[in-house]
Length: 183
Image (tube, rainbow, N blue to C red; front, side, top):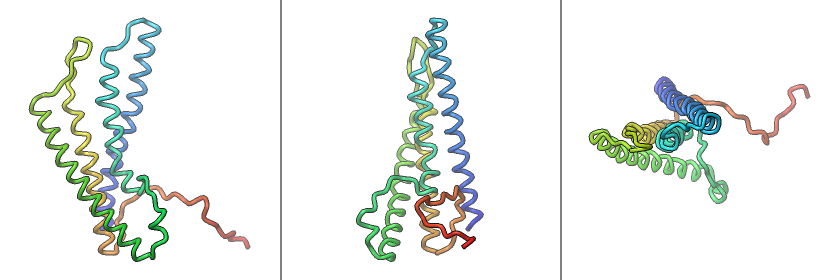
């Protein structure tokens, strides 16, 4: 099980790493546009389109699997934390199964849309030029697909009671009391 979890973590790392690289590319692109606009009075064409259609979509959706892997989604546990541990575990299982099903459905539907855009060769006209946009539609099914994969693997680990093998940063709780080993 651990080897499959490590492969899933590796896929997450690649997708998130690509999103990180695209953040740097976006910063460089916007900086170059601002420099060209105010220093040389010749702005770059289609910067807004590239930022909104390419960079931001990838940055928002590619890391979804990593966020799910690290349990970093927003959660409000005001009521659930008062329930017994068995009820909390059951609710976590139900929520994770629901996440896997919903994200798989979204991945399939957005994948169909991406394929349709690919077949039609979707593009935008910006500043008198044609900018191909169909590749941007594939960021959504990839991101949601990875998130569904992670959720499904977590469900399998919960049901079997085995370690999922999903790697990640171990973040210590700063509020957790630590005993002094020297005492």
